[in-house]
Length: 106
Image (cartoon, rainbow, N blue to C red; front, side, top):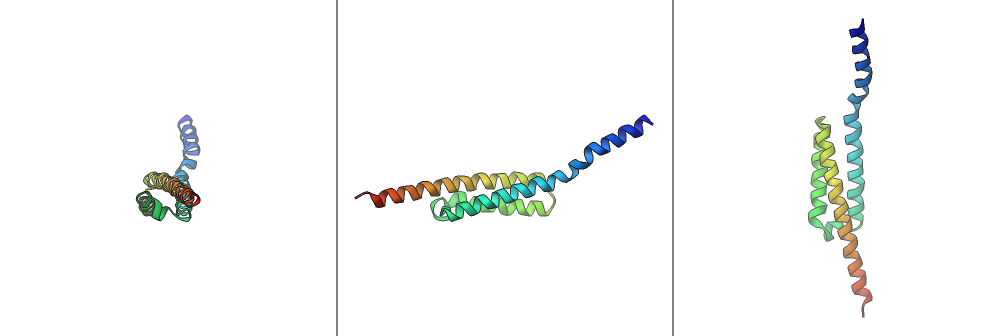
């Protein structure tokens, strides 16, 4: 009887964890996509091409992995895509600031 109770409790505790992979990877994919679109809008395609295109490639790979139910790897790739997109966005903003400063100087 105790063994059945222990198995039942273990099942109750572990069952909700089965759905965490898809949820986490989906959130990471959305975050990365939003960050990449922000970088694109800031002009990162021209100002920080390495970071921008790398972010797109990492996001593409993350989506591929999520499609194969490799959620942990998908989350890792999506997080890296987000980091690269943030860096591209920062570089694009800095380049825009430099351009505005150069135009304002006589």
